[in-house]
Image 1 (spheres, rainbow, N blue to C red):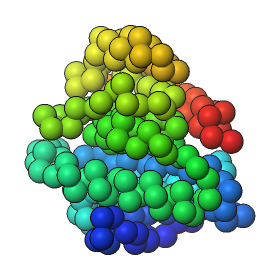
Image 2: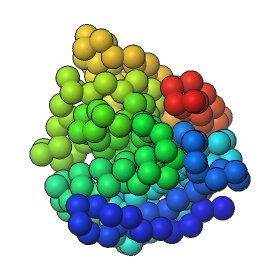
Image 3: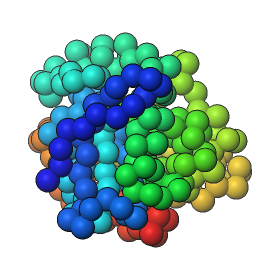
Image 4: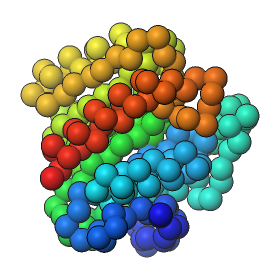
Length: 230
C-alpha cells in the first residue's frame, strides 16, 4: 500500500515509508510511526499500512538511513540504537512532522512508537508541542543520556502500553511516569498488559508476540488516535 519517500530535514534529505488512505492524504489525521531498534523493517511498514486502512496518513521516518538489523541480531540492534546521534534524530523527526503536516493540511499529528521509538515519541512531543497533539509509546525506552524529555513542555495527550514482564520499561516505571504527567495536568492513560514481555506487538517475533494483547493494543490505539485527531 505504501511507498518509500524522501523529505527534508534541516537542509538534508531523509527517507521514510509513507502509507496513505485510499482517498488520499489531504485532510486526514497524520501519524508518525517510530521504529524499534531494528530499523524500518517490514513489521513497521505493515503497521503504517494498517493505519492507512484505518483512515490515517502514516509516515515512518528512517532514523537508520536505510539500515535494517536482522531480528536474530539483538546485539547489533543495540549498537545501532546507542550510536544514534540525538541531534540528527531530532532534526529528522521534526522534518517528518513537517512532512506530515504538509501532506495532510492539518495543524497537528500523532506519534506512535515502539521500544526506542516509543521513547523518541515522548521526546518528540516535548520538542514539538506546536504540532504533536497525541503520543502513544508502546513499551518505550529512552536509553540515551542526552535525550531526557522536557515533560513540562509537552502538551500532547498520552496513551501508554506497558508489558507486565518488561525489564526495560517496567510497570513501576510506567506508573511513576503516569503520575508525573498527571501532576503536570496532562491527559494520560497507561495500560499494563498481563503476562507479556517487551515487544509483544511485533508479529515477526514469535518468542514474544502475543496475538490477544497485540489486538487489544491496536484497538485501543486506533480508537485513541481517532478520538484525539479527527
